Image 1: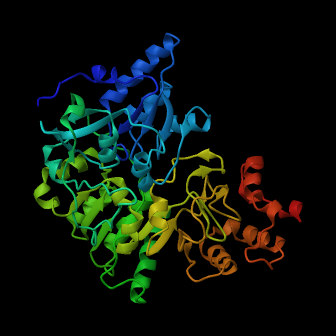
Image 2: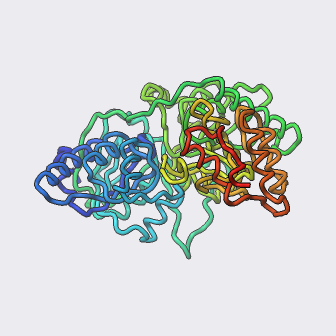
Image 3: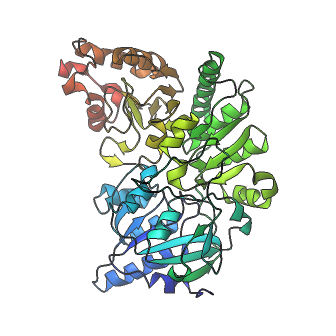
Length: 498
């Protein structure tokens, strides 16, 4: 059958107040752009008439400015899940204007299938090709696209010419069965392919194809600096040491790395280490650094959920699929982030913390314990099941006024039971096999900035020291309280809690 070619405005007009929308993409890579931008205009027009207009949004992860940004400013979002990075969205969430559900990315598709979040009325899917028999070939990300396509009553396809049809070979689309029929996911090495390169849908569900030419709204990450470079070297040195001790096999293990400048610095350090053999990556987000390492022969294969790269880098991949075709695969997020596969493959996970406490608990989502930053993303999926779980962060921020190591985290995302290693530019704390008191000693000695070492040792003196996990409960958030009071944690005075 031949699908109706419609404008983005016509497609947006099919979406009504109260609908739930499922989107392709994972980060700004591969997400809807044209239809959501037009939907924001509809919301503004309806609001100007005094009419309500809001929708629920289900995504794989964050989206771009033309989705989260414009819809937030149009006050068109009632509910959204999961992860996001948009500044305007973050502000609206922290102002209580949007109901935001921050869940593990591996769970998003299955919780939709289980019916936990309501029905999917319309799916908006970015594609590089769509065939008359209902094969949708995705662009730069997998996300939750297979699930929302299957659940949605109607599908709108954004056929985006900014993505080469060379992307038609990148994807491995696979959905597990739901309980009680679920079987093992048969991935035994990162390069295994177990599905199809397309999403198969009933062609009758596709209500329109919107032709666009809209490049991904790629985010620019901060350039490396001496602190992030040192963190990268510390991670690389630690992994080399574990390999020499026989903890890590001499062939190395697959790597997962989070998003951002620290992640790029870590990948760069690992790539340049002559002691580490060429390795595989099994991760969610593939960044520019990974593409460079594949070019250099340092990464043998990269499995991910999205190509979150600059558009120049993305075109480099598309233009040389003869080289990259057998070295890259993109999967749905419930497969790229599957706890089952993470544990089976023995993945080394490396993620970023906002803050960690002296016992190894990690906050990766909330500033000051109350204000959402971005969300947990896939960090929990990997951390809880990794062969070795590593968290990195600078020891201080805001010109030293904030310590990333505190007595007690202000929000708790990853518990001491799941965190093996903490790395700052100061050094490495290996928490494996240690009691809480031993962990506190390792973290303070190795990871804390010199300005805060005595402050944290003095905190421990407030406790009776006899407990399994010693805390002076009244003082546990004292450094946060001092930050709120004076703007500088270095001014913390424990005498008031004595």
